[in-house]
Every structure is written in structure tokens, then in C-alpha cells.
Picture (cartoon, rainbow, N blue to C red):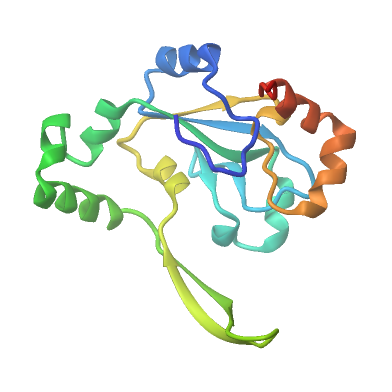
Length: 190
């Protein structure tokens, strides 16, 4: 299982692992019911196939609001099935050249996103400079568009897949039960 660090409710759930195994998919992505404040794309049907589409790839910004499910980025992985699409096996993982070749081959099948960002550099007593940077990235969820890689989607409870990206979200988390859910996963005893 792979998940983002800001998906605080993600855990190794045996029931969801069982769903992933039963699906026979190489990758099973957890999606959650979408709310207005969820940004970053979601589950869509593209050319008749369900796949995760990033907000950056939407034809227009408003299209994101039409999606029913948001991508939590929690992904269940069948390693052997996933390696097949890279033309690799577990035995190949010690061969850096073969792995690099497989990764390059897969990368050529996926889109590259270019984003412009600003980076602050603090260098003194409250002084900072802001530098424009260009970021080139390929996104894990775009693997759902690779036709020879079997993917599945699991609708998970919102508490499990909701992401906490900003301290301003803490009030809402406290009110909607998300904080209590995450707290129930933890043992805070001395």
C-alpha cells in the first residue's frame, strides 16, 4: 500500500486489501466522495475507460466540479503485475540499467506536467527572496490511463481518504468527525 503523508486516515485495512486481491488489478486506487473544496482531479471516464484525471489535465477548471469521486492517492499494489508493464520482474530489480530502461519506457507513455511555482529563500533577519521555478513532473495516478495495466477503484469512507493539506482545514476536521477518526487509529498512552 502506498499513500500520501497528508492522507491521515489511511491504514492497512485487511478488508480493502482483500478487495484489491479479488479485483486482480495491478493497482487499486481508493477514491472518496468528492466535496467542493477537494482540488486535484478525480475519477472520470475517458474514452469509455475509468481513470484518475489530474486537475492539471482537465480541459477547463470547472470540469473538476462535475466529478463524483476524489483521488485519495491511497494505492494498493500487486508488485508482480505492476512490474510486468515495466517489462521487469522482481529478479530484475538489482539491475540498475534494466530498471532505468523499464522506467524510461513507462515514462514515455505518460504525460509530463509543467508547473510554474515560486520558491522563497530566507537568508537573514526577516529577509527573503522569491525565485520563479519550473517543475516538471509525472504523476503516479496517470498510470490508470495505461491500457495494459489493470487498475481498479475502491470507494472508501471519506474519513479514511480525506487529506489534510493546510492548517486552515483543522476546524472542519474537528467538526466533521475526521479528527476523532484519526485519533481512534492512534494509541497516545504513556
